[in-house]
Amino acid sequence: MPSAVLIFLLLIAALLGLVIGSFLNVVIFRVPAGIPLTRESRCPHCDTAVRWWQNIPVASWIALRGRCAKCGATISPRYPLVESLTAVAFAGIVWWLTEIRPEATVAATVLVTIAFLYLAAVSITLSLIDLDTHRLPNSIVLPSYAVGALLFTAACAVGADWWSLGRAVAGAGALFAFYFVLRLVRPDGMGGGDVKLAGVLGLYLGWLGWPTLVVGATAAFLLGGVFGVALLVLRRAGRGSAIPFGPWMILGAWVGAAFSGPLARWYLGLLGGAS
Image (cartoon, rainbow, N blue to C red; front, side):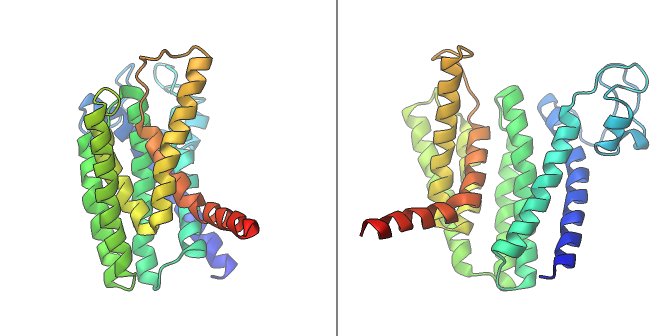
């Protein structure tokens, strides 16, 4: 792809990410609280309606110096951080799926890219909700099965490999079953939301390949385990402390998506050197 076209696509993706990130902030706050998403934005302190120019991603927070224009209450820096993270994630995914692993046709690449952009948005949303509330809402997790399956099926209909769809379905079932068994064995160590999220992540990791699925699933436990040990060492948690695992499942999945190829080549290189 010509560099000028790629730069244009990355800019569009980043701008879209800023807008979507602003919406994700609303979802992260309102879904756990049971507040309708259609309600107009208001300051949670003084209940003053937020004007459109006060809702421009990142720029409005900077212009307002992180405070409500009416009452002066502090606006959390999480808002611009979520917007910026979403912009970076969207641009990175567009670059990855157009330059590193495009599908057989342009149409299929577009549909798969949309699917992974959706996963990125869901990943950010669920991670922060789980950190805040130790919950993974069904209203976000369950529709993700349908969205991913429909987009991947449509991609296959316009040129993507049907075997990828078969792996995605198998991956969803395998990771769901694995977490389901873990929950049966240790009900206090694994939540039902984690089991349902596992199926969603398995769907996407399976689409990318079996090595990606294995690396993504393993990375979740490695990262979560290291974090848990660090909390114990720093005495920020005890052995009975509840630590949300959803964010580590999600981070592990993205580690698998990004690094399973290089890790596989490194391992094969070791085997080749040993022989």
